[in-house]
Image (cartoon, rainbow, N blue to C red; front, side):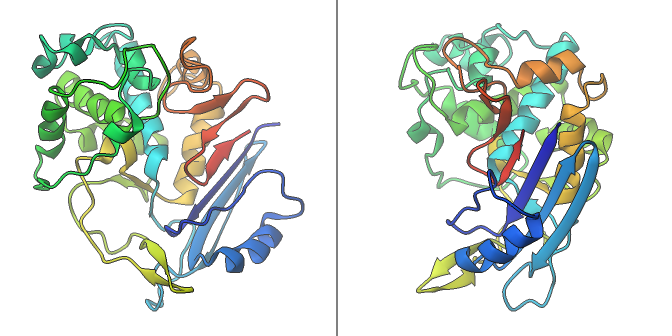
Amino acid sequence: MWRLLVILALGLSAAFQTGGSEGSIEAFIDAEMPAVGVPGLAYAVVADGVTSVGARGATKIGSGRKVTSDTAFLTGSISKSFTALAVMQLIEAGAIGLDTEVSHYLERFSDQPVGAITIRQLLSHTSGFSTLQGNTSHTDITGGKNELASRVDQLAQMNPAHKPDQRWEYSNTNYQILGRLIEVVSGQEYQAYIALNILESVGMEHSFVADGEIHESMAAGHTPWFGTTRPLPKKTTDRGTAPQGGIVASATDLASYMQMMMNGRNDVLSAEGKARMMRPASDASPGYGFGWFVDSSNGAVGQRRQRAGIR
């Protein structure tokens, strides 16, 4: 039986444990939501092709706006699976080679050590870039349409912490480069490509890609504050980090997305392409495919850093 559980909660450090609980999802939420201090959440459960959705709480403390199953949340690293899917679409179209060096597509990477990294290595976090390099803060953010291009041009000058295929290490840097690759190869902004070729194709009507604007309809992030919870200040969505963390989606839409990934059909991507994304990418990446953590021992695929998974 295919089963998918997606829980989107408002940005607190405490995490729901979605696996292994007994009883209904409603009973689980009743027990856990007060304990972790989450002000609002939405969920979707897909089992045997049937989707159940629900929501609790407010989009922002004190706002009076209730969370619904169509409320858009910043999904964080689930976004990497969208970027990987877009790259796989371009691979199947013959526009990108999986084992081709990145310098073949991005001119700024020519004659640089980083230019020898392949697309497969970027997709699977075996490029040599470290987690620390991927989490480097930027103080020169402009919010302009060239934000991603500017950041990736800077990455072309960076030396990876390790040699390619030497080790697996999760790094946002890999997916920033892949986002720029999508732009250069497709001739479209990352936001436009994802919206047209994935969100619209899947029917994700309440979802969008970080575009440098403030979206009042989004659920607000919250943080613990001396035993209580307070909302984070509203700010613009970040175009520069969109490929690794900027997909904004509802629980209902993510359920549709995962149904597409599980349906075994040729649609947004070939059935074989989807399956390939959810298998170990290489010997150097036994627990990660293309945009997805994988566990070959039990067939589980998911995102460890988010509240979403598939079994």
